[in-house]
Amino acid sequence: MTSTSITASATTPALPKPSYADIQSIVADDFEIMDKQVFGSLNSKVQLVMNVSQHVINAGGKRMRPLITLLCARMLHDRPSEQAMHLAAITEMLHTATLVHDDVIDKSGQRRGKPTANATWDNATAVLVGDYLIARAFNLLVGFQSLPLLQLFSDGTCDIAEGEVLQLQHQHNPQATEDDYLRIIDGKTSRLFMMATQGAAILQDQTQYLPALADFGQHFGNAFQIIDDVLDYSGDSEMMGKNLGDDLAEGKPTLPTIKALELLKSSDNSGYDQLRIAVQTGKTPNAEQLIALVRNSGSLAYCTQRALEETRLAQQALSILPDNRYRQGLYQLTELASSRLI
Image (tube, rainbow, N blue to C red; front, side, top):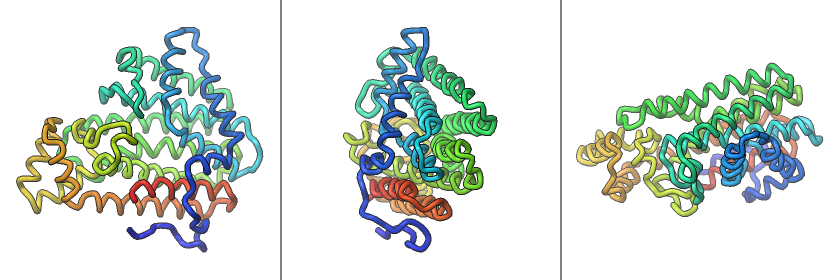
């Protein structure tokens, strides 16, 4: 596979790929405080809200979005910032809320190998607690007394919701296009990465970097989602916490399926019909055969190249940002994400 790292003259020189823990250690003290604030910011008087909120936050992932906020804040002004840590915690709260709602929509029983809120309690409880987390996030955002920050997050949260609705609109639609897919992931995935980066610049009063940070967040988010969608057909189901082909069974319009349908239509009518019917109905009794169809169509090779191109564009966006170890951490994060495809 051809490397997509851009040259040392354009951005940070290519380095041995660190682990996620290595990157996190760059802002270790800030991260520890932020992580405590995620829980400390919950203050509902309703015990069920607290129980469910703590359950879903405890089941959370690597806190990548708040990590990006902390790296960006330090990159722009290398000093401890309580406000940046607080904003990073709010970003994670919003992300958690979207996951809770996703699990209800997808009828998921597990996320990362742990029971979801809707499976542990019920759909109504999960939806309402997701709503609480969004409301609490905005309640905390008001405390910054920054209209530009509030505007960024309110606009972004609308875009996230629209992305989810677009995905629902195209569910079980074999006619969905790559443009439809990009509009969906721009909202449901990339927008929160953009909020994580640009929010740090607003806090640090470094708004001249907003366009570059938006580009980084969008392209990194696009790459991250495309990689996730490729791994739904080629990854390790145990590590992913879900079965291969789950997106297909749910009728989600992901790029591997969209491209496979396009390629099969002109080369394998029988395979095209099998995949089209599976997308339309969500019935995949022959899941292994369908996964093989997608793999053999050439779709995953195309998607891999698209993900690597998005990674290159994210790296390129970093080149005009302050050159320090925090920018290097962001660069390494893009390398780590794309290494999942190798």
